[in-house]
Image 1 (cartoon, rainbow, N blue to C red):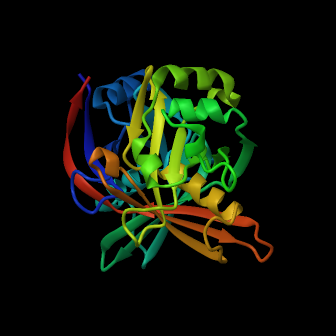
Image 2 (cartoon, rainbow, N blue to C red; image 1 turned 90 degrees about the vertical axis):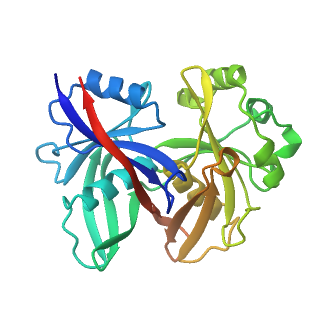
Length: 308
């Protein structure tokens, strides 16, 4: 039997049982793709990661494969932050001053990751996402509203229509008028299935958000809903969607835009796992987005071994 070690961490949280849980297999050498998928199914979390040596010639420091319970995905934010927290905590990343940059190889490409530390203590991990790609505005807003069990009038269609955005993993950003609409949203699996058929690339991951946070220190209040194995699941904290959200807000000037716009996105309140996600969007003098960063903390919760 194969024996492989894993760690469980909570990401975008500063104490256990908050934020988004993640399983990390810090040494996945010898595992087949099928075994990784089965382990992700067994963990039954939104994502599970497997760390491997980088591909020859990639110039990356680590290769990371990211799996949801039913497939491998090209990139995700909270798995990146949690994985590199685990690697830094284990001493596999040599910390060099307040910020250490390492290169991650994922299916989406080679991406930098920053480990911020003070006195040898990891303060936060920041994933540097791809430059945003803005897809089409979503015309069928009625179907979007139905998928969320909302009315069309709940959506903030004049200022902020639903739109595809990707900074490594595409999401449909769905702004609504207030936190009340975010809180009452409820995924309808049959409509999600129809939405997936109609939308480009069959992507129907919806990120519902508003500029009406619970914590006055936050900027936005959000929920991430996806169709997984024919069921709608809610993510407690979504780094990939937060990058998309930050780019969307800056692109449409829905928040005060500076050369470096900092946004605190709160998520997970409705499911008892409150999370805080730090977003940073850098723009040029003419307003073009030059960089999107998403960061946060993580806490070690448990570890163990899997036997195959």
